Length: 170
Image 1: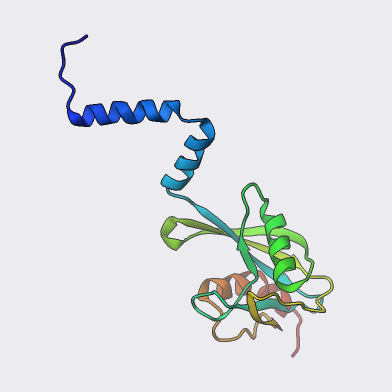
Image 2: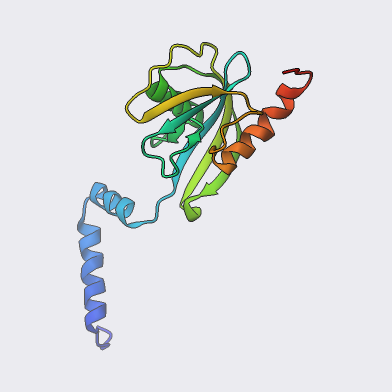
């Protein structure tokens, strides 16, 4: 014994350490997952039909209630391309191809990461909207609805408009 006095705080800390060490690993992992700050990862897609139009959706749960790119949260261990393909299938019944990561940005005050992918929807019909989606439309990238969120509008304009407008006469 060192002869040192251990205060109440030290006793509590020792008791907590013993309890922690005696707990099964699965319980410790569960607790850490609930206590530690989390980073959510979402994917959104600039998805073009064969004519070069971009798919936009209105989600029931989006705070802004505006037209937005399709997407959602990744599941644990899911690749971004697989996550976007899954979300698109769940929300619209459509399949996508040629997905490529184009941009990543911090969202939700640093608590989230949004990955922007670009790809194709080779067969854009029929749309089968699930209960999360109010409406869907195919819009020309240079004629987007006014209420598309600024970051998504910029992504569409930066990725698609320069390519599609080359040689285009409307």
